[in-house]
Image (cartoon, rainbow, N blue to C red):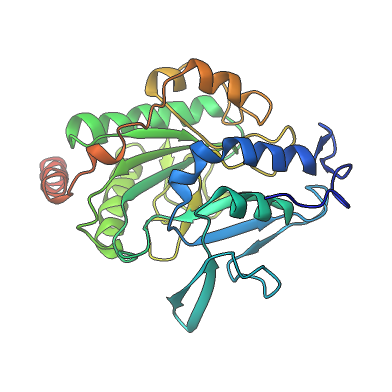
Length: 297
């Protein structure tokens, strides 16, 4: 799909780093083969910055009336009505949305056909400041609990902001309420076991420098940043799936940008290539978690 360059070829979207709207669009055109598998059939929330990150952006769930007819949408029920979400199932749509000033793409944790049943659960490790070492310490503890104690496959992603997502693939057997209850139990357990390190307090003024274990996005209609999405920060960092070994030597959640990512992709095998093949049912991990809590009461 070819779009007119008028009005965007010289527009700077990232002022300090000088990255233009053209470069953003070109990135999404090039990354499409890697990113589309994570986007397909997932209702989107768009984070748009029509004039770049120097101006305040906005989140958009409902598709704009002026979007062309070939942009696919889906009506999703919400508490007080319906939302007509955009779907991004092809490169043309991805390019068009970037052309509209979409910098970041946020996806649901479930796909069309089983919207009530997530195919992954996510813990977002969010530091109170910019302490990535704190994030890594938290990731180590959570990895041990999930992977060794509960025998769950664990995957990791730099958010491109400050933190790390710890992700477990699911077989779409448990609904959002069940998954959220399980992740809440884990987050509360860690916050109680390591009260000086972890917190489940949403408000930053209540965190007292501790690492926030965000389990709340494991809910119907909540979203998470899509792998390979750009974030609205200088240098245009991206959210990137990484292996545990790679994560241990990374110094920042913003370690990879639209200008460095393709060299890394050529050198490193996809750490999430077997993600869906390792999907699990949570019945056994739930029992193990109950036993763990009972043992330590």
